[in-house]
Image (cartoon, rainbow, N blue to C red; front, top):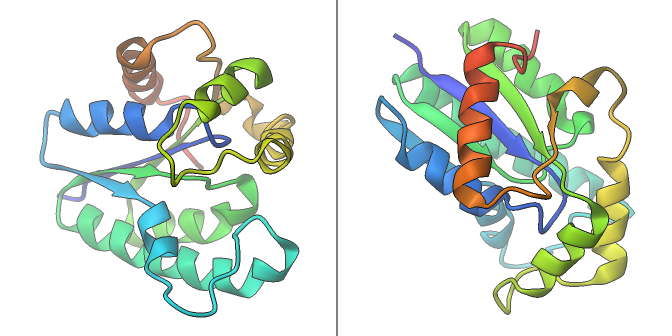
Length: 179
């Protein structure tokens, strides 16, 4: 039996990693918390900051690697919580894999207000992105999601546990599934 995939995304500082750890840790079946930043950090030479325009080819390769890991775990029966900046611009290969491998795949965007996002980002570990311009730019990319707007959870007033519970409810509702 294939597992389920939950893509938990949003701008830096939205709480993805904390919430994803709780969602994966509270799963009813075997689960994996797949942190996409690890795939970027694995690049030792030639790394380009993934939000820069010249990173397009690198980002495509990294998404392919992430998708290979996601589908391998999911086909093995694991619930996979994908934790990272997976914007709508990266969804086509995920949708194709879900269809090809008959996977249930949900897409949940954590989007607190920009003020909350920046405050949370400032409090992050020393090696995490804290550049206000970069965070604001990425926030703006998640600000208008058109047909995916109904996949947004405003977590401005939620702590990590409340946000994880909201994600679980959202996924259980089936409304956050990628067609």
